[in-house]
Structure formats: C-alpha cells, structure tokens
Image (cartoon, rainbow, N blue to C red; front, side):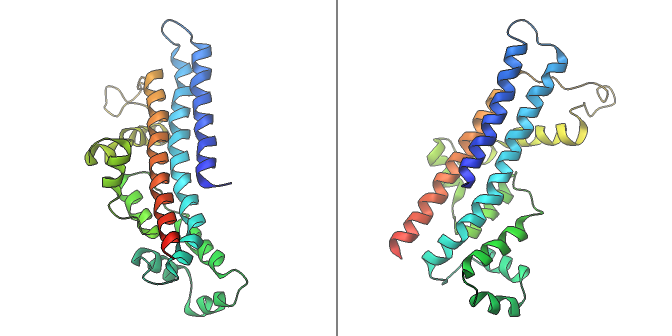
Length: 216
C-alpha cells in the first residue's frame, strides 16, 4: 500500500477515536477518563505522520534514482547508502535482478531508528529525494507563511511527547500529579492539521518526482 494511503488509514483511526469520544460525551462536561480517547487520537495521528516518512521515502527511491539516471544524486542519499553498505555489497547489488529495490531497502534500514516529527528532521529527510525549499513550497500549498508552515503541527508533536513520556501529567511540583486537560476541539484540530500537513508534503514529493520523470 502506498505510504499516503496508509497514512490516510491511520488518520481515519484517529478520527474514529474522536468520534467515539463524542458518542460517549454528547453533551455537558465530558468525564475526565474519557479524555484518554482524545490523547490516543493525538498519539495515533503523530505516529501516522512519522510512519508516512518512513515509508514514502524508501518507496520513492527507485523512481527518483531512475529519473536521475543515477547522476547528481543528493549528498544526503549518497551518504545513507554509504553508511548502509560496503563497497563490495554495492557492487553485488549492481548484478541483482532489481538493484534499485535493494537500494531502497538500504535506505529503509538506515531510516528505521530515526523519528521524523520535527521540522528540521522532516526537511533533512526530504532532501534524500532532492526536495529543496520545502517550507517555501509548503507555505504556498497551505496558503500560510513559511514560519507557520514549519510550526503547523509542532505543538501537537510536543503534546504527543508529553502523553507518551509523562502520561500527560503536569511538569511542575504543583501539577505533577494532575492530568493536563484535553478538549475534543484540540484533538479534532490536531488530526485535521496533521492530515493537511502530510497531504501537502505528499503533493510536493509527487510533483517533484513527476517533474523529474518528464525530463528523463
């Protein structure tokens, strides 16, 4: 399944968590324990974004390298391949039935232990596919400023970290035993903005690949 389709499926799961919360709490002040459904939606949405990059980049490697005819590849990609294989292994790959699929596997393995949730790491990851001026393109796509494009989902990523690593408890001495409140509109906005963010990135990646293929 293409990375973008898998991402959309993950987002639907996050939306289902928010919808379940609405079913359980249709009116009045929601019960505090039901807010964990909203926390789950935030975690799932951010994880879906991270997973998208782990899949989208390797699945695009063959198209990208083929369109470039192996010439003038981004330094980031070349370094990943160097880190993933010895010279002997690279020579062996040349004689495999589908050499580019082996290169894609090398990239996938190199990315496996990394996370792609903050703006800097996302920008660096997309350089593997030759994407330049990412935030300028994102600003145009999303019709926001470059600074806003870079920070569009950052607060949700940080909240995800608080949920996963601290159970969403407060961090001060006064609040360390208190759960931070989570409202349904916050979770709805999180899921919606992460969807917008990734859809815009996927459009940029696909446009870049298609443009290279037309020139090939």
